[in-house]
Length: 190
Image (tube, rainbow, N blue to C red; front, side):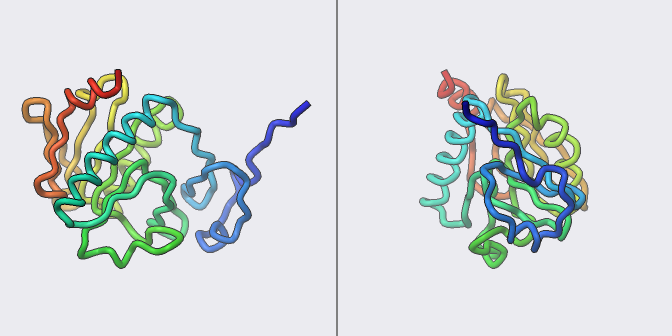
């Protein structure tokens, strides 16, 4: 009979440097207020949206080299006691120096989080506040079961302001020219 693996580090207090030295245990973690928290595995619809959005952004950037896009799991060190693994992150060409081999050292320009039951409060409250405080210029919170109910924020004077769809199309404020048609996204999920 197989024994279920348990996360070795959930609840452990660590610094970012200590975190980098830990041996792999098969679980994904984020560091929140210096404490390691297991990130639940994503579900199918989450992965489908992640793949669609990543492909659209990557394709756009190949034709308009304005920066780079990365997908989870990629550690982003916001502070010594705060590390997240956003679903999708973008770093502009001017700031590529924050993209290190092992992690991103500082806030990306743009982050997308796709909601799931296990991360709803974290994505809409804790991460929202942390991303705002640390200067992530654009933050999309994607609702997987009705993408038109997603929320889109742009940092203005240190505070997030929500911006709206235009004819079911979201136009990025940070990646000039990037437009995502949410009707096409929903159809792709069927």
